[in-house]
Length: 249
Image (tube, rainbow, N blue to C red):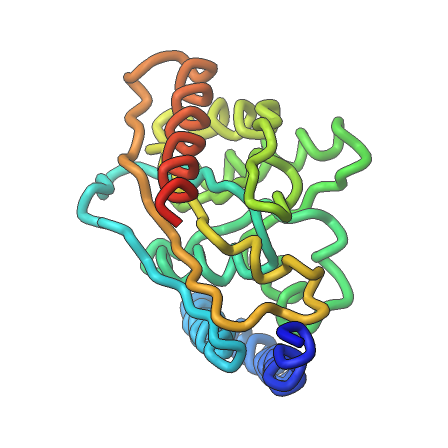
């Protein structure tokens, strides 16, 4: 009965979701011909619309972040767990003033209105999941670009969505390569909580009334150890935070 009830707002939500992507695609094409900053403003407006569309299915995102903790003279590597398709809009809005760029799977780079265009023209990159050599090369080139322009690179080291909220172990190669190419970057651990519920039934339907949370943990300075030690520390901190949040849910 609950799932049947959820389909009523779901029908409206998916119509609105699709309309947002269709409407913002030509707006992005127009904006990028004006300037990169114009394109960024259009993308941020799209992200705002996508996040607020969640209200249709009774969901919303609460942000627990303190941007004052971030230094202003370094590039950034944001490391997050991965739970749903809304991870990217959630992170994109929380850190919009840093214009974050994402490492996405190659399939997202084509065929999806607005999303594919933004990945291909907004500074993000795609990696093939079935070719480690090409994936590493793409991450290295992406890292060099992020370091040169002092930008924020976002990576999901789990490599796949944890659909039940239980995190997968880090696949450390991609993060290690990114850190090597961005030697002065500040590491920002981010924990997403309850985002997995959005796809609990693989969106058939989206459950009603989920309170999603985004938590920014204490940034990690690169002088706290070797890259390998920092990766282990970040993973431990994120798992500990997830366990704490799950225990109080």
